[in-house]
Length: 606
Image 1 (cartoon, rainbow, N blue to C red):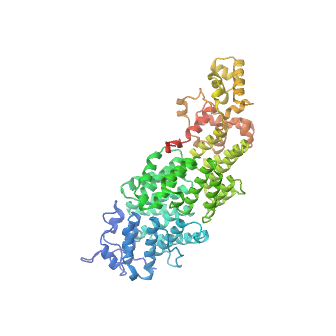
Image 2: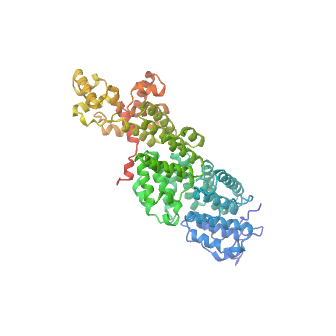
Image 3: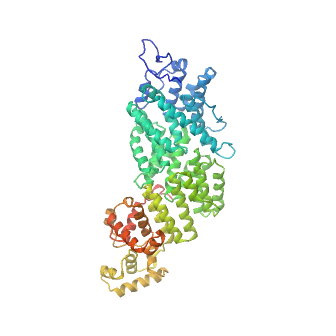
């Protein structure tokens, strides 16, 4: 096939269209400026009339640039001017632009989302059309559309294959790369919204390398943002956070960038998951007041969904539901399949937290009506399981091949065990969740899981005297009666009396049960807590032991949960203390609790 992208110098008076050696149109004068300078709005509309009159491929390129910088109406006008004069092969580009801009703007009723005819998926117009139809189907998903996930997968396979072929043709040719870049960015970005995130992240990394090689700095932040978005689907939160941090300064250079609020929400999500500090309230405010909320509802609503999802991943579905509710009616939000599934699941979890099982069941029905993506199947199994229906959330999550789905499944099985009041099963689920979360380096999830289990089992020590509380706290930290006596300058028998009185007041039968309580620890000062190491630096097994210590388990319970002998548990605890710089079991707990972000900061009015 022919790629008319090789630029030659223009003769005087040649107008606005460059002519390539094969006689077809090449890059426009100023097109390099469009691709290398930022903001782009100053030069993107240069020579609109000449472009429309002379060269359909250049017109499509300019419309594609305009969509990337959020000028959807300009793109529609540019392509709409072609009308019935457009040749059949160029009609694919017209359809693609009209579909993409309609979907971005949330105008989903009556869209023609029929499968594109096979062939030429590796041309710019063909690639854009297939990607546009796939994107549209993700967004109109729901009961009665007639679209299936098998068709969706076939579309995604087509545009990923077309994008690879087009990139191969672009590689090593500067002007081909320049002219093809906006098309493949669209395809790869849409791929990041589907179950092809692994392909999308790899492809975008290659695009970013090429854009840097050819000096196309204006597009690098957009490429980095999409790559980060794909990586967060894969659970690679640290890489995603670094990419977002690199992309944000460039995106902020264009105050009208449609990707800026979207990127801020992604930063909020990946930072919160990894327990990195981020100002949740300011980002939420920006998302809820952004002009892009009206101009591109899908981008804005996806950003708001990410804010909510960040809270839900840390065990706060009620706060997550509040964020979604501020964006509007849940069923009216413009979201792609996977995000709509998660939004319904958040509302389901919040309904359960409120004791509203009929309301929760309705959201199960909503999810059941969506296309059966891996995300839909995984969420459907989790929701059914929490309602006591037959389901296999762990197996379904493993089949999805997505790490974050396995974390969510482990969350649901932990919650289920706590609802049943089965502490032994809950401890096993906590250990399993910690192992998965540790591999993803999701420190915040690990800490919040420990807090969830502790809060479900603790009793308020309000009935204790100050001295009883002091002694009980040291006993809960793992100190022996003799050690407590030496620490507080008391007799051993006096310590025994205080502990017996504390157990009676709290309704406990065994000293080991004190470990499950949230007691003030006099030994664990603020200064010591600030100097503790990170639980993320522990091995997976050490992390599980530390999580169970923080959950209030005795060595015997830890050994039983992890199928270890108590001597091995003791060795692990000694190593954990050395690695964290901790002096007691309470210090280990402090390291875990410190790692959990304060999710209430994101919704102070609750």
